[in-house]
Length: 476
Image 1 (cartoon, rainbow, N blue to C red):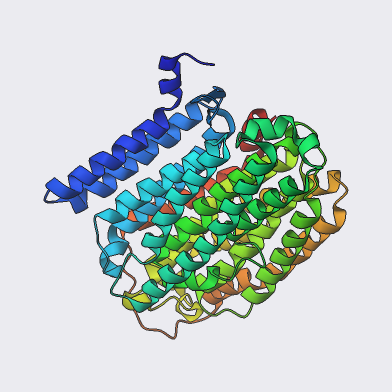
Image 2: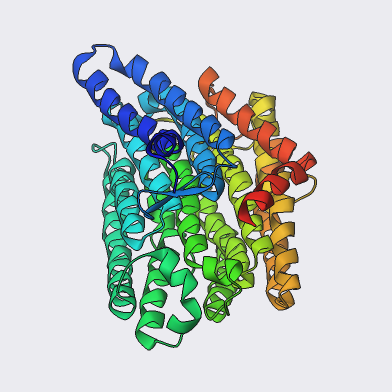
């Protein structure tokens, strides 16, 4: 175990965000122009934590008496959470004024949700998983309805809360059954004795309930029913955050729960479960997205399909597939936040201009936005040489290595179907005249966030090994 001083040094990201939340609350309470200070303070907080997490990648230790892990794999997830949230805050500076929802607690809730995600990704005990999950989820329920004057936001918040609470019930009951079968909630203990426990029907049932609960959180079929309405009704920037960092946090827990399979070479008894939800999510998400005319709903169904692609890695259950999932989550965060960012710029007051016909002729209104949105669509479709292609490539290869070729083929089929609705956006932007007469007001902050996302997916697409080698060195 590390010394106390070294422990605090490794826990610095969590401490910084925790102190940041307290300071943000004080700024909101006592400073008059807090609405100008809070976003930049939040961006500085996330940027420092994200960069520090990269610095501490090779410092992998268990702290707090075996309750949390610092450095290593949690550090990569901390980078995803913090940079995704920093981009969301940058987008929100001018978007909140247009959306009519400037409330100081908005930034404090985002900080708190990121702290919850970080706790989930570093958990070494099921109680810590639950604490992190609840902190993140409660913040998301409130953020979904942050504009309380809007009926659609209230509806999104209520639906998310009710179905989220339902999923949490599965998770709590699963933890209770595992505790009853094992006698403690230590994830390390479960890893080391996994083979013995896997013959206990109560342990298997508890684990299955836990997986079902997190299948809601990653929005996999058939636990996806909340996604389209919540993404459409929530503020566009919040939808971008929930669909990326929220999904990454849930996957970080699934990876932790399956660590016995890829770390200790235990049999993957949940392979049939992941294979089925993966195949169904990919096909359902891709096929239903074709019929959507609202951009946010289209990206919601697309997000269900992407959960399916990543679930292939969970079914494959080897260390290469886990590295593939983390790579996919990293690039997906930048692609999806970028796509939601462009929608937030086009969007008018009262949720207007989110339909597909409003992107028609965008190449003439703003060539930069059109190029960036094309990159995001090509990346999400998995067209080389963008980063989205390599995300799918690594996961499909891992599936083939584990004799799951049929699942990889379904993934390829789903990708081919999805090309239709992604390319439809590009065709509308470049080959169709705009029928809607509106003036595009582009915030410099939002444009900066869009360009940063575009740069990341080009760089990770041209040099995928750079990121993948870092992830493999940490996962192995």
